[in-house]
Image (cartoon, rainbow, N blue to C red):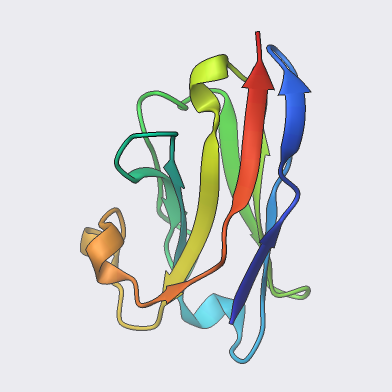
Length: 124
């Protein structure tokens, strides 16, 4: 089970750090990712990290501003979001799956376990 939290309302240029608490399995057994769905748009990939943590991916739109990290001791995934822009406004979802391998971890279709989403709103 995945439980996302930490969204909220922030002004442009501000920061947020959503988290995703994982229960039922050890976090380091899975590739895990963040996706987002802006209002009226399709879901898109934001960032993902491999099971071992040695491979990470960032969408071009967030590269240099967002940082994904995992705390295996707390079984929690984080997404540090800095220099937020209005176009970052979206519902952010975390996803994990034991079958996901590095070559497919960018694909939302590869994940079968999803959190409920947390809303991030960036005002201009």
